[in-house]
Length: 199
Image (cartoon, rainbow, N blue to C red; front, side, top):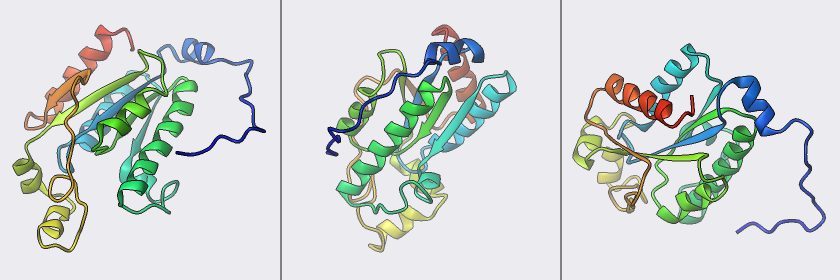
């Protein structure tokens, strides 16, 4: 756990999240997509963002691979580094939500504790956990990055679903069947966001 510097102080701004939300015409919120590699998290998040953009929602999509090219490029895939990766993502998402954006984050995030730590960074209605529930066999048959093949051959260690566990969310706000067409899942998410008066 990172130690907070005693000589730093949180600055309160004149322009608040509420003012930014009013200007944007929608709430700032984090949609946290979790599931196995190949479950469809990033694809669903990508198409959902496109749909939200088309209806005038200010969004930003945080994707695991993209962040590991920059902010988290110094991290590996051991347990400590994976936890630190999720911590950093949570802190970035918190700033973006404060900016009044609808943030989509697509991360395997296999540990319940780490997902809970991120959730606790936000007010009660600012964090929506979306579990993309796709059977391992389906994820492995898709294997878009050929990572399962590497893991099965022993060339890739600590791979979630093979030699590293994934802890299924106990009470996600919404669960998606990753075998259903993406367009159907995106429509379901849009209806959910409307029902919660988020958009």
